[in-house]
Length: 351
Ligand SMILES: [Zn+2]
Image (tube, rainbow, N blue to C red; front, side):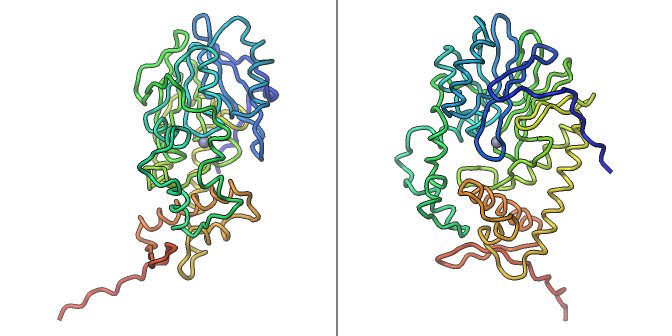
């Protein structure tokens, strides 16, 4: 039985507010629509200013928070740089806007910068405008009026302030010092292609992005723009390095509260995903597309964003099982691609 998590702080900051933690780290909570309701971002004292890790989504209420109460909190201290854990809009949304405001660079891994450009950068003329829509159709998710803005990436662009002009690479293993403290960037694939987590050994802190969250499981899916076609395997493999952090750090997650119990949480997540794989197998009698599996795996009705995430997550599980030899993909002309159980082969007979 895994140990329960503990939450060392009495109360989290309210959305739009910040509180100081130990070691020059400040916990900022920003409003976010939908079920998540908030994202946590981190200000770390850095000489005369602060390094900011993640930025919040580009929404009027988040700009108001940065321009009002948080500007007051910063006082006359400026940002020194912005680092984004990954390209999702709640993490990178205001990076371009804040970078202009403070005249600072933005750092991200190359894989995440590529994904950000893919969505928020100028259109690629060599690629048909509908390429994402077509890729989803291959797995049975047909474009409708309602789904189109999500499938085509319009929704993403509407909550991201653009690609930062001064975007610089930061990779796992690079030296990173913030306010005289060593913060080690760790690569954590699976949720996306090149998410970075940040570990401060001397402070006993781990900024865990969306990789390890205390109360919800992050989305592990396959999407048309992603290079990693085995995200579930990548996600589970990332746990090894995290579980080996010694002593076990206090976790600063992007959603939910600061917690202690990293290894217990990793153990839970590992068990959860392996159980989901088992469940997927029990749900497959005949050939099934990712779209069809999403209906069986998730409670409907889902809004368009969650439907797209559900299909991506279903596809990741189907592909994982196909990789393990449990399923095989069949793709008739005109699609969609469906997965069925592999027939155990009879042992070949020799005469
Ligand atoms: Zn994310």
